[in-house]
Image (tube, rainbow, N blue to C red; front, side, top):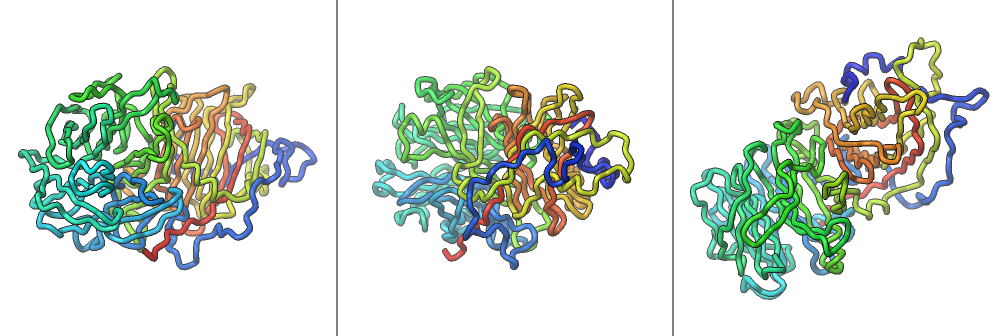
Length: 553
């Protein structure tokens, strides 16, 4: 972010607020350069305000537990007409440690139903239940029956990490430990965890990736019980690797051009990042993974997208499964996960489910992402504008010159969660260096989503939000992602909830996910331009209906 930090900018914000260039003789509520359009979706029968008994930061459209602690997502699978999803849960937080697998189901990946704990911690003498993955064994390779759900995850006792197998014969609701656990005993490694399992259809065997400190180990098995080590992928510039993932996708939707993708949770400090999910494209030959390029790419550039998992939809054709996947991440960061201003639950939230495709961007196969299509079902009547011109907020002017109605010329959110889509560009005659949209603005605090045209980046800055002063330095750091002009504009698709912002840039070529905490009740929206004039060529602000978790499981 080229300009000063937002905390410094807030000092002059009272007088240098939003200034949209109005024409003479035009009422402030209808500037000549803003053309309202007809709304396209009725709102009857839907609630856009969270219930009164919800705590200040309980999300409207993101999954959180009712209470206590959540962290790593576990890859969902489709069975019996619904998605089955698990996340790590600690019912004893903050008094006790250890996690277990908490079960939630969904038919659309937007609305969720709690089903309770599926795998309890400390149940078999091998420690708590940590990250792993579950598969539906349709061919009975493991010998527990066709359609049995097999979960393999890390258990840790006395600091030793081992891999155990659990079986569900009731469709993923309750699991029982395998008598032969652990199925993989620790060879003496300090870090040996987070198994991710996929079926290698070409070689007709199971394939596992395992986090082993500064490397990812590859293992194969015919039956999910006996595993053979094959090779390792090593990095010394990304900290301790966690939560690996391996999958195959087609490039640009062409099934004849498929490639493998290896991903992992990493510490990106040496690459100017925080913790996040890095990935590489390359080839898997049954023994080892070979990358196309040594430099990692990033599934999300924000502060809070970790331990991500991806999955396909088995109901689709093979070509469609290769072309599109889903992903979900832990919307939090270990640098401040224990410091969040949440009252009744902790551990942040899960990100929105997003759809992934592997497209060629600037000559490189790139995972592009967008909110899951089902999110549109929550969208209400949208306010639309076209042709806004935002003048330089730093241009000399006195408080007396400011139009008190100017900030109202952007439509204001009328819901706790909303979706903002904009197309922005520097004005050709007076080009801005930067544009910022302030979200959750009020009572002197805000976060900003912006584009730095000079550096070709988008950013999220929250050093002026309501939680920033009490958070570690990592929280106040500005996070940025590539955002070059495409056909002369940068597009932003921004989903704002009660305690988060997720930004998808240029059709999902890059993304930024961050926790954000406004002052209680603050939900203002404004825009400012820096160093010149910004054209907001289009703006669409749609409320999102509340999607409460069904907690009667």
